[in-house]
Length: 300
Ligand code: TA6
Image (tube, rainbow, N blue to C red; front, side):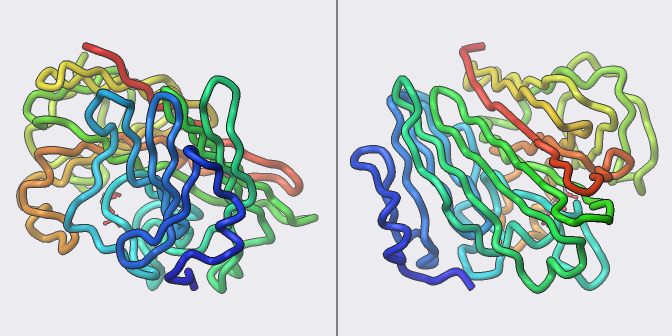
């Protein structure tokens, strides 16, 4: 169980003007990061990045002001870490258990030219017993861009480790009606809004004008979010990821979500990088997989 004040063993990682341990919302421990270019905020529960902002720019990530911040509850926004399954599973927490569980901070360092890097390790929970032995590490590097690496290692001697993983990023946008997404044309996708029907993306630039919930398969390339109101382009570069998920709950679903304001759908878009559905990973004994995502922004 995540302790609700800042334990001493966390304080030792503090670096003046760079890394500060605090009691965050819901008294959950959080880390405030300050680099030469940007600031970030990470909760120990779920190793959950809830904020990344370049100095002089609006926040890159969206976190709902209606989100819960409670032990064992998912945070609505930022970058939930999804493992070992994506989406629903009978009798189990949606999107796996690592986003609602303890992570430990193992390392916190400054990196050359004013950045900061933090390495988290996942301490197994009872639900881990559903899997062969594994290790999960997560490295967050904060510079003028945000780099995330989820490293899963199959620690078993004889069994494959089958899993899905995803960095379920909520991006902040000024107005969803003035946003388009490029980099998905020609890809097949599963349309969750239509019972996972298999379709092909024909749009040069995807516009969001209704509920969108799509798993793009064999999608290994970069994706860009063009925000014409903010005059900002967000770029998502990745490796070790064969799926891209695009999600906006739109009006009706937004009204049904208890941790999301009815109008929040206007200011967010999820573009997620992972390995889900037919792209799920079968990891042989002793092997590791690295899901690496780099988020950057520039004027449009
Ligand atoms: O990634 C898209 C999705 O799987 C949607 O279907 C929607 O359920 C969303 O994730 C949020 O899931 P959550 O469990 O956080 O409510």
